Amino acid sequence: MMLKIDTYYDNLKAQAFCDAFIHSTRPKYIFGRSAWAKSIAQQIDVNGFIDDFTSEASYLDKPVVPIEEIPCDALVVVTVIGKPLVAEKRVKQFQFESIDYYSFFRYAQLPIKQVMFWEGMIEDIKSNFSKYQWIYNLLEDQISKNQFYHIINFRLSYDLDYMRGFSDREDEQYFEDFLGLRGSGEVFVDVGAYDGYTTEEFIKLSPQFDKVHLFEPEEKNMKAAKERLSKIDNIVFHQLGLSNKKASLRFDTSGSSSKISQEGDVTINVDRLDDIIQERVTFIKMDIEGAEPLAIEGAKETIAKYHPKLAISVYHRKDDFWAIAQQILSIRKDYKIYLRHYTEGISETIMFFVPKES
Image (tube, rainbow, N blue to C red; front, side, top):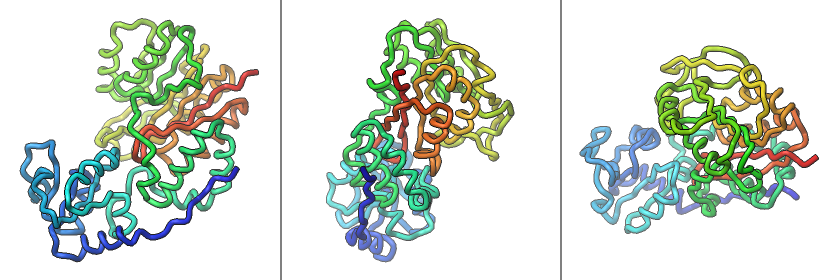
């Protein structure tokens, strides 16, 4: 079966909207206050910002107003990236014209901020399409294939219509029936544990687990995780990041998600999973903002020996969709591969590797 790449025709309505937003004298507003909103305001003199959930009266020296006060002839760019369909549903209740940020980025052709995790993606799909076809053919079920088709075409086209079958399901993330989690005997490794929420969800599904190893490098998050899980035994807390060697690295905690960066505001310690855990492991989850390939390299002995279930995020880097699968299968080929996407936006795509029965 072939991975279908659709033919994309220019959206003339979106083009006309962008032309009017840039050149007309109609009232112009930005829905939301974010780095994406700011990048538009740096290029275009807007009338103000829409935010129903703040008491602040201004942003970037422009008024902040509730949506009910926007005139009917206004043009509105919705800069909500994470839940664009929810935001779209809200603005469609009013008579003014609006457009989502993804379409505005494509058609306005302004030097505005790229959507996160999109850098180099289109070029990679085009230059490495055979590898996308390869992973598509390896996906185990039709749900995986359908979701992969929609995600890839969304990345190529910026057309939000491809995401209309998705919803925000982050409370279900990392845990699917096909994993076959058992009520007892599991040894879970939570890599990028944040405040311990994922471990807490794991314990609900496997209450008689043997052990949890929780990895979180940021001190504030580790404190929150320990408080959340304080009444539960058999959890080992590691205030570490995972990588392919022992090192101290700069870590950026300033954004919406912390990550390793040379411009980071704090220093964290990282190490190889293989050097920290020398015991049976049954399930590894990794969501570490693009550092997954290095962490996998540092865990290859554990993966090879114990053949654990894996849930790995594959949306941070341009080649994650195929490169991470390639990396895992180079360690062990006896995995079934599934893919699930847990938001209506760009983030939270997880690739699952389920051991094949011997």
